Length: 89
Image (cartoon, rainbow, N blue to C red):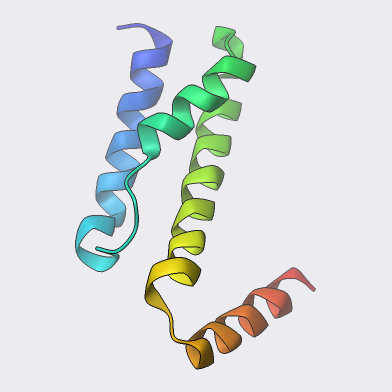
């Protein structure tokens, strides 16, 4: 199995373990798309780890975007934004 397929297989396992389809049914499942975006930048086999980390980061960014766009109420989003800002400090 090629490193790229193995990387995508590992990421798919991680995504399934998150159980986002059940826990976050409103969020988009764009893991493969994110992986191919990163693969265009880090295409060499030695960047397997970087591809996996960046794919996870972008996938979670999509989930946060979906929380803002499709799920949260204004009051919930205010609290969520405050929590994210505290995390960053």
